[in-house]
Length: 320
Image (cartoon, rainbow, N blue to C red; front, side, top):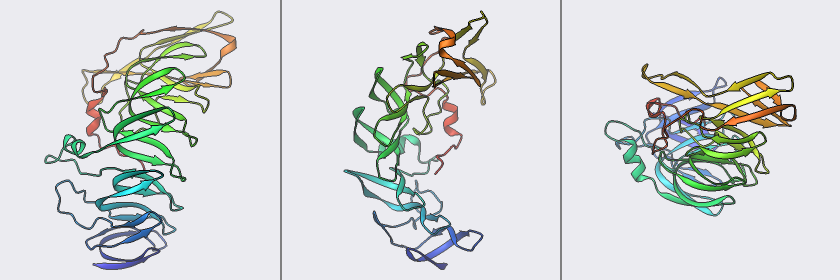
């Protein structure tokens, strides 16, 4: 076991460590109790490994400037974010020291401890946002440097309703916000009719893997108008002034895990500066005629909102 000096003091009980090229500490595993004092309180990095749901990973990691990047806590602790208090097991930071993400739970899934067990441990929290008040279990919160919420990633199966310019929308997976608190993006739980500059389109991404709520298929500008959406059902026909036409419809591809299954590949449409952008092509809205055929392709929405359940075991993780 070794000891290393950091800007937070001496780290004791270092059993494994990685370093940057300049020799500064990048990350390490601890087996002794250490107290890390920060602007947000005193944190104790993970040093015990015995529990069934305990992940064997780095106790703490640092940026090259010596600031904390990630800390896996030895035990859950309460932390205050603006006016709310959350129980957390893992915290990530900006290089300048502000909290970047908090993870409510950080358990290891195995044959002895499953997602259902972890879900049962999760607490419900109330969120009072400008576009809706709701109560839900979350996996992680992403924050701006001023501690305002940047995104919420819900537990699989959790559903909430939010208010938009297009009415109430039931959502899954998560939501992201602008710094002023307005909604930036969301993941519709089922096909929702959205009035766009080219007509009503059913917004829904059947291919959404539900990994996190940071980049969702239905996104908005700050004024609440549609920035982009994904449709898994609709046909968009575009006719030019010379009579030429083209149709965009959801396609199909072979499932990664089962060759006998065909997955739907949705169509993404973006709106900007009087144009739409679709499959690497752009069209001026006032120079073309648009026809939308809703439900051109029939789909079945599963009750739990998971349309690619095989992907839940793929080991994809949030980028910190």
